[in-house]
Length: 175
Image (tube, rainbow, N blue to C red; front, side, top):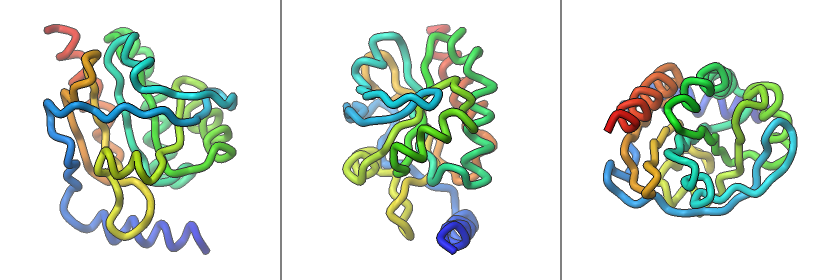
């Protein structure tokens, strides 16, 4: 029943106009530390540490194991080699708990990138809360090594997030 209600809420929200994230290009990305999973193993994720290695694609998604979120995770998983070639890391964030993320990191993310818990405070800091539920919308941020937001794509359809964030990372590498 809970998944049905979530699907109905997402369908209603999807019928509305595309989402708009409040963090504009050029804004300083809020730093955070949270728990997550990579290939089923728990770990602590700190944005500042991730940025030491290059740009980071932070993609917020509503709920693990829903159709769109699973398809998006698989698409990011398939594209991880291209993101790595461009010098970037991918991190998925949702309000899901650690047990769910452990399973999702194996089944949908295929062990290619970490997924982590977005607390209500983190969802608020990145202004990605769905107005109808206490979960995040689907927003992808590309954050430069300096911690500045260089690209934002906010749309409940998962279909363009991977291509658009990869293009932004590749453009950043050419600079």
